[in-house]
Every structure is written in structure tokens, then in C-alpha cells.
Image 1: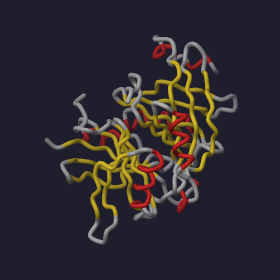
Image 2: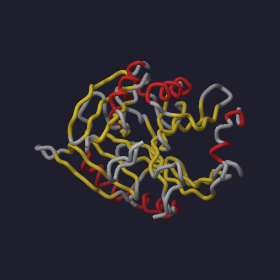
Image 3: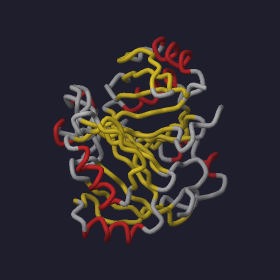
Image 4: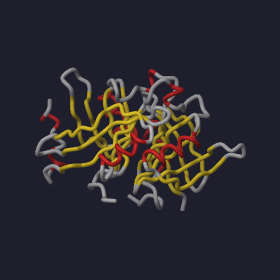
Amino acid sequence: MKPTPDGWPRISSCLFYEDPKRAIAWLCKVFGFELRLLVETGAGGVAHSELVYGDGLIMVGTNDSEHWKSPRAAGGCTQSLMLIVDDVEAHLAHAKANGAEIYRELATSDYGDEYWSDRTYGALDCEGHRWWFTQRMKTGNPEWSKVRNKHDRHG
Amino acid sequence: MSSTRTGIQRIVPSLAYADAPAAITFLCKAFGFTETFRYPMPDGRVGHAELSYEGNMIALASVFEGFGETPLKLPATSCTLWCYVDDVDAHRDRALEAGATITSDMVEDHGLRFYRASDPEGHRWVFAKELA
């Protein structure tokens, strides 16, 4: 398969907000994203935006369609985003100090020798999108890709 | 920043489905994902599943408290997933054949050729190819 366009992961998510400009500022300040591109509409709204975290990318879009709404406007969230960070404790301390709502306290989940161990907390952003911030504590068996296909392990 | 392990990107979207097993079948058949991991629950729900598209992953799970809601139960989705593919026309044909709803047919704009689709529970997707 051909490589993706420069600076783009193969799969990325566009998140919708009622107030995308405020959301962009919030995501940069609280979660540590950097604004890479902002395309404004004539009226000063957000036509398109790209926010990066390391080699990760999200787009922040406007709630301008009946099909796309911020979780706050829709009454629920249809995805959670997992983001891999280097130091989850520092990330949590920074997010908390800047007003993120923590819905899942920091905890380590160890899935056993064949799998991995993650230290994760869950937070809601300014309009209710759900995020998990994860630090990988231990990788599993190098043969994990084969092990992971054994669906019967937990069946 | 340290790199993520092979096979996982920095940010992984995880979608909530009312019928996760059916969703896995659909996403593989219609959109070309490959199932790489499934954690089945005793009650038939899926606690966690991972699907790969050319080595890049999404996750999904059955709806549960504190995770997410299916778009079926909401007036709208809170995100759209973007995915780059090599042959976007063939991808659209395959998706259509497998029962995807094409919400916006192929257009060329901003250097991309892309279409929009929704899956059976209403999650929204964009499949795009970069124009040479």
C-alpha cells in the first residue's frame, strides 16, 4: 500500500464541537496538543483544523450539521480516543490542574505475560468527548500478534 | 517523545456499538478491516476488539457505561473517522455492495478524492485518496 500523505496517520478522527475555537485552545492547554493548521470560515468559524500530539493527529470541526454534534449537544459520545503518552502521571497532573474532568482514576491494568500492561486515566474534555491517556508499562510476549488471535483464551 | 510500539498509532479511536460482533463483520467485509483481537464477554457482548487496516488500528467495544454510546441512540455522532486508502473507487464499490450507506458520493477537493459513508449503526467515515 502507498504511504499516507505527509504528516498524516492512516486513520484519524475528526471531533465536533459547538465552540471549536475554544475547544482548540482547551485541547492545547489542557491535553498538550499543538495547533498545526487552522482554516477559518469567512465568519470567523472553523472550517478545518489539525491538531497534533507527537505523531498523532486529530481534526476539530464545527457542529454545523444535523449529523455531527458535540457530545454535549448530542447527549452522548460515540467514541473514546486513546492517546499514548510518555508520562501519564505528569499528563494527569497537568490536565487536572487545568480543569479536565477525570472520569476514570489513574490505574494500571496488567493483562498478563502474553499481553501488555497499561497505566491509564480517563478524562472528559470541555464538551464531553471521552479520552483515555495511556502509558505502556510493559509490552507482552514478542509473539503477541499470534497470541492475540487466540480468541478462545477468554472465551 | 518515545515512539509507540509497532502496530499501534499514537491516537487510537475506539467506537461503541450496540451489536459489536455484527459491526466487526461489517467493518471487515465493507471497509476492508482485519480483525486482530477480540475479548468476548460471557453475555455475548465484546469487551474490547481491535481491527487493523494495513497495520493501523481502531478499537471497538459493545456499549457500556462510561465508554460510549451507539449513534443509533443519539441524534448525531460526535466524530467522523478519516481513513486513507489506495483505490478509493474500488473501496466505495465494495462498501456499497456490503450495505454501507453512502452519505456523500465521491468528490475531489483540497487535493483529495474522497467519499463519505455510514456503517449500520450510524458511525460516520470518510475514505480518501491523495490526488497525485
